[in-house]
Image (cartoon, rainbow, N blue to C red; front, side, top):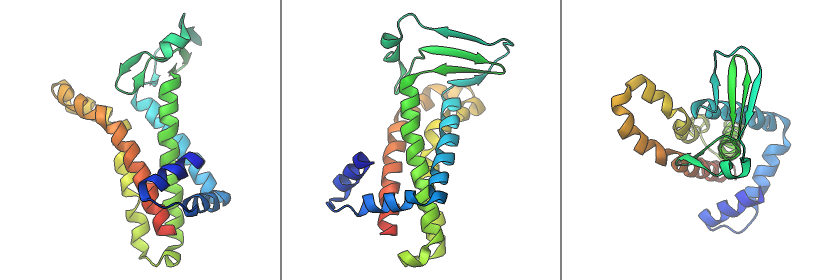
Length: 195
């Protein structure tokens, strides 16, 4: 959290701890903490499904495979910001590919999404404190929702077909960093509104 406050202060130029205090005061409230946890877990699951680290399988028995050199395999890139799995576990009817780097990236994004949702809900529930209209709280959730396209975009390729794949894959490779930036900017915006 201190790292997040440092990033926020670098973007905005503020040196005080208002952002940190706002984050801490928000997360001290049980409802906002629950929102953070639940939305982060749901987003992480959807992210892992979207990058196909969790998928359906026709195998009927429990099984697992561990690669021979997990440390080396951990850093093998399949594509931009997507890494190979070091372990594969079959838990019928699903198969889970465990890739530490993919899980870390998913955790970072899911925590940012969870913070956004918690802050949006706080802003929505307390609009008079911020001297804003009721609708601003709802509108401010758009950046995190739109930036979530990085994990859901592979589904679009399935709908549109293989002809579009080559063009879309170049776009998808930049969506993950854009999602991160949009989520951080959204948090800055929400913290400014709450302060």
